Every structure is written in structure tokens, then in C-alpha cells.
Image (cartoon, rainbow over all chains, first blue to last red; front, side, top):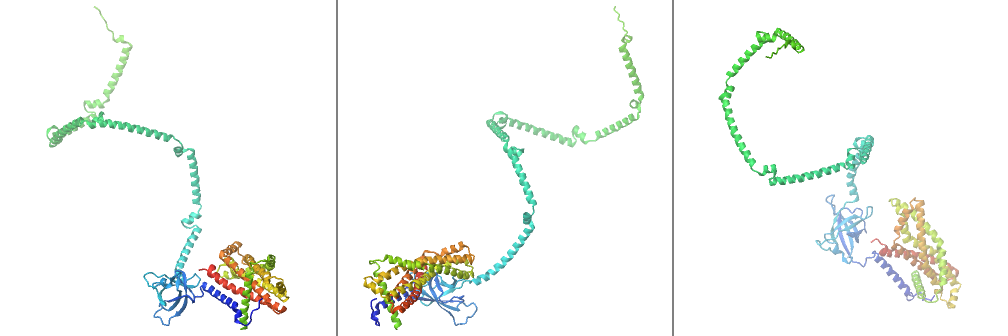
Length: 381
Length: 255
């Protein structure tokens, strides 16, 4: 080791230099980490709040979430407020770094900026967030006062959510009742879940549908034939074909008709039939007129038919004749008179009957023995 | 006044010693075998205490942090907390404090004895630069070995924390490891390796200076050893504070 001169400052030049260098290094490190700000120009901004909710000195001050400074002082103002909602009770003094990314802080925090008290996290510390100013405001001066804006604290939110939670409780109770009923098998849904008949029926239906489908696939029954047998199709096809043929013929007929060929064509095109029919109708009309006149005459009692209808002489005579006929038939019934006896008296019948039997015998006998009766002598001269 | 004078004087002497060491660093002759021997003695020789220190520190850290995190329901973040603490702070600092105690004292005692027994003067008489022969190998060895041992200490600490998390907190291994993995970002590791390099240099240079400035026979050797441990430990913790401040301001900070 080289010998050093002791007890003289001159012998400590290197040591002092190193000490100074270490001191500067330490200062530089503190300056880099932002703790040493004696060289920076600061801007002080003040705001008034109703409640700082546990904000403490040194808390961060952010501009749109970016750190630009810290809270320097929190003072309770000396004046007694007029009412409970006074919002200028507490003065917050903030110290902003003079430059934010090479833009002066007073250019960014303007007179229309708002200081908002916020929580850095749900459980974290409170900070102050300053909203950026707009062109409507002016750049602030040092020691200027900006307005503050109160946000809802976590406590406020919890209080507000209590009502919602109460309602939710009621809703969940209701749901609990409903699900309990369902579990007990009450109500439509409960029955649907608990009652097995619906399942059994469904199962049967499915089985039957399966059987039906398989028979349909096999081509059994009407539906099966409908699906698997091509006959219906073929017939329908033929039918359509014949329809088509008919339609073509009808078309031809219609074409002929339009040209005035055939009866229908003449009917449509030829005027002769029309004329004749017209004449016929004229004659009909004349006849009908005459008939009308005749009927009018009859109504008036004119002519034979009129008299027949309107005068009752004929009727009286007819009635008298009927009375006479009635008397005659009554007499006949009683067997009076010749005709009556003829009808009623059996003597004539008997006699006639005997006579006819005798005649029959005679005729028989004649046929058997003609010679007995036909004893004709032929004489030739 | 005398205390201040002595402090500045020692600072000056250490600076001059450092300067001489740096100046002769790239000049032949190079004592490679001596460097390797010092690495073996200083580095590998300290492995056992580093392993033990790391393991138990990690375990204790896991126990304490899990106990605290339980209050907030963040027990599954234990791995991240243990790993961050170890990589950033405890790994480098504990390793280097152990080295200051074991190696720094050894260097001071060895060189002090050589001074007392006038071996240094003999060496100089034979034309060998004692700085080159004795100081540089020790500085190089600690510059290389301190980060290596720190890495091992970090690993053992994380494994010790894992053991505690699994056996005492009944946490799944995957939960702890996934959480610990989140702490291992590039910047954290760079910061965690920068510290032991600086600390290793401090331990070596303080130990060498204290040894070489021994005066007054065997009593002086004892005093030099004690001072070496005290000064290097205090310097390690003080410089650690400065480096952490610088790292947070540059690569490890949140904003």
C-alpha cells in the first residue's frame, strides 16, 4: 500500500471526490424515481370537497388516470357551513408536476377541469382524478381553485343495493315455493315431471307410431301403398295424360266452334236460329195476349166457359141429378124394382145357374152324341 | 473528526485499490488457475449454507405470506409473493450476506495473515503484483459466483415455499407453481441478477482491502476480519436499497 499523507485534506482528494460522486449518484437515483423534486417547477391547484373519505396527504393526483402529482395538504375550512350538504367544507391542496410529457400541467388542467375523489381499488386508497380541461376553459394559474365532483362511495352503493337485495330475496323465496311445488308434483309442471301416465302414454304413442311407420315402410295399408305402390301414381299420371288429351280435343272443338262449324258453332255464329226463336217468341206473345183476353172474358162470365164458371144453374141441375141417382141406388140397394130385384133377388141367379148347368150338360151330350141332335137329312134331288 | 477522516480515507483507499485492480485486470500475466481455485473455494464452498438459507427462507416466507393472504382470501397468490420476494430481494441479499459472513471474513483473515507474516512483502520482492495475484482472482470469483449462488438460492427458496405450501397450507402444487411463474418476468430476473454482481464486487473489494490494510499483528487480523464482515454487510444492504430504488424507477415500477 502506498503511504498516504495523514491528517491533511490534500491527502483525501480521491476520497472526497468518491464521496461526492456517491452522493450525486444517490441523488440521481432519487431524482429518477421521482422522489427528489426540488429541481422541478410545481403547480399548486386547490379544490373544495364535502367529504374526502379518508384521503390522506401524499395520495396520488391523476389526470385521466395518469399520475401527475400528489396531495400536499388537506385542511378543514374554518367557517361553519350553513347546511348539512355544504360541499366546500374541506380544502384539498394538490401539487402537480410542472410538465406532463413536456406539456405544462397548467395547459392540461384548465378552469373547467373537475377534481373527482376516487378509490384506487375496491379496498385501496383514495386518489384524486382530475378530468382534462377543454378549449372552453382557460389555462389555470398557480394556486387556482378548480371545481370538485362527488362520486358515490362504496358505502353509498351498498346502501342503494340493499333495496335490490331485498327484492331479490322475495323473488328467490317465490322461486323456492314454485320449485317445492314442482318437486311435490303439484301444478302442470309438477305433474309433467312426477306423473308417469304422460310418460306411459307418450311411450305407447311412440311405440304405435313406430309400428305404423314400419308397416308404412313395408307398404301395408292405404298410407303404405300410397308411399310404396306406384300404381296410384301411374293412374294419376294416365289421368293427367287423358285430361291433357281431352283438353286438347276441347281446344280443337272450341277452335271449330269459334270458326262457326257444327251445331254449337252455328248456334253461336249463325243468326238464323236466333231469328226464328225471336219470331217464335213474338208468336208466343200474341198467343199469350189472346189467351189473356179469353181468360178475361171467362172471368167476366162471357161465353160458354164463363157461364160454366160463373152461373150456378148447371151446378143446381147437377146436384138434382145426383140426388135422383142417389135415390135410384138406394132403391137398388133395397131390392126394389126390376133392377133392384136383379141385384138383390137370388131367384134369377139360381134359375140362370140351373139353366147354365143344364146347357152344359146339353152341350156335353151334344158333343158326345151329335147324331142324336144333328139328325139332318140331306136329300139330293 | 477523526472518524470522518478515517471513513473518507478508507473510502479513498478502497477506490484506489479498485482502480489498481481494474487497471491490471487485462494485463498479463493472468492467474487462471488461481481464479478457478478461488471460485471453487468461495463459490462451491458456500453452496451448502446457500442451499439451507434459501430453502428455509422460502419456507418461512410461504408460511408468513399465506397466513397474511388468508385474511384477504388470496392464499393462491402465495407462490407469486414468495417468488417475487426471493427473486427481487431476499435471494440476492441473503446470499450476499452469507457470502459476506463466510467469504468476506475469510478473504480478510487470509490476506491479513499474509500481511502480518510479511508474505505480501516477499511476493512483491519476488516481482509478483499482490493485487494481480491475490485481489483480482477473488474479485472475479465473487463477481461470477455471487449471481450463480443467488440463482440457486432463489430456486431453493421457491422449492422450500412449495414444500410448505403443499404440506402446511395444503395447496395444490400446480396452483403454487403457476402463481410463482407469474413472478418470473424478464425484468425481475435481470434486476435479481444485477444485485449479486454488485454485492459480490463489494464483498471482494472490502475483504481484500481490510485484509491488505491489516496492522498490528494477530490482533489486527481479527479486527480486520470483523470490520470486513460489518462493512460489507452494511454496504450490501445500503447499496441494495439504492439499486432497488433505481430498478423500480426504471424497469420494475408500476407506472
